[in-house]
Amino acid sequence: MNKAISSFSIFLISASVILSSCTNDKNAQKKSEEVTIERVFRNWRENAVIQGDFCPKDSCTSSYFSKHKKNTKLGEGLGLPDTNKFHFMFADLNDDKQLDALVTFHPVCCTCNDTTGKVVPQAQVIILSSKNGYTSDNTFFDHLFADSLSINIDIDSVSANKFYGTYFKIGKQDTSVEQYQKSISIAFDTKKIKFISRKKK
Image (tube, rainbow, N blue to C red):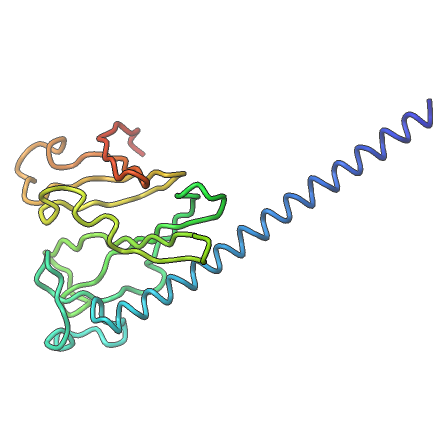
């Protein structure tokens, strides 16, 4: 009887050690993937500045945009915000058992400190895993709608193969809220859009 109890105790201890080890391995992998994603996003930011899509925070003045591109929706130059304004949302978007991310932020416009009266659309960057490492893409949400220039999309959460957020029809604020502001889901693999109902927070 004592031998049976002893054997069972050893089994429980062994199982506990194995489970703990698996949990630690998963946590370590998750942390490693998050660090890699953050590095890839830093590289994207640097390239965005080099290409003239955004100006860096420490150079954000209206004169900067006399030599660089302006945002097509606003007709204004856009600057990158402080680093604490970047919002990372993690999920396995492409079902490859590796962590991916959507990074969202609201650029600062004009002189990069005056946004009075300006609607600055949310910017989104997908950091996606592949066999060859991670890639960045800030064009996924462009042209999802036929009249994309008159629509803003704010994404607030992600899950496997799905983005969730709010659709805003620009210039329709004189109509009911239900007509110009709607909750949506967007499938990553097909880009299929659905208008959905969500509980108000």
